[in-house]
Length: 285
Image 1 (cartoon, one colour):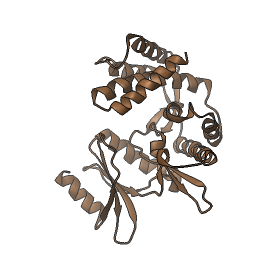
Image 2 (image 1 turned 180 degrees about the horizontal axis):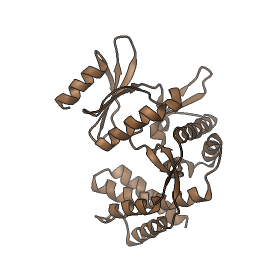
Image 3 (image 1 turned 120 degrees about the vertical axis):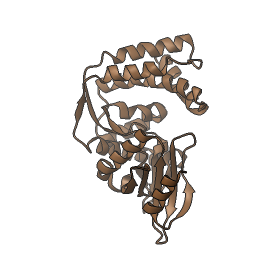
C-alpha cells in the first residue's frame, strides 16, 4: 500500500483496529472492516482502479442515501488516494446464508424493493445508442483468444451481439450492475426475519433499464421460479418485453465475454460461470 494511501487511511479513520479483510481476490480493491476505540465499525475501501473508485464514490454521494440503512453510507473520502470510508452493515453474504425457502423468498422480495429504490434514486435518462455501444464493447472482448468457446458458441454469441444493434433508444436509470447474492448481505431482525442490504457499488452507473435484472437472473432467478416471483413482487412489476430482449442479447454476449476474458486473466471460476450461462442460453434456444 503506497504512502499516500496509508496517509489517507490514517487521516480518514484515526485510531482504528483492523477486524477483518473483506477483499475479493483478484480485484483492484482492498477492503477492510475497522473498529474504532468507541466500538463503531466502519468499512474502508481503497481502489487502484480510478473508474471503479469514481463510480462508487458517486453512488455513495447521490444514490445510496435513498436506501438508508440497507446500503453503505459515505463517511469520508480521499479522492487523490482513491480511498472511501463508509458505514459497516451487519450480516453475511446472502450466498453464504442458511435460510428456509420462505426466508429466501422474503430476502429476494426485499432485494426487488431495494433495486426499485435504487433505480428511482435519480431522474430517468435516455441512452440513444445503447445497443451499438454495448455491441462494440462485447465484440472487442471477443477479438482476442477465444479458446474457451467452440466455433458454434462464438457464432451464437456474435449473432446475439448483432441483435443488440437493432435496439431503439433505451431508458436509463441509476443501476448497480453487479447485483448477485455475493453483493447482498443478510441479517435478521428481532423476529428472526431476514433483513437485506446491498453493497459494492463500484460498477454502478446510469444504464439501460433491464440490465440490472440480468446477473441476478442468470445466477439465481432462472433456477428458482419462486425467488423470481418474490423478486418481481418486491420490484412491483415484471420485466417488460423490451427489457427481456435486452437481457437475452446482453446476457449471451456478457456470458461469452466473461468466459473468454476471465480465462485470459486466470479467473477460472468466473470463466466457467460465463461458459455455463452461454451453454444454457444455447440450450434454451
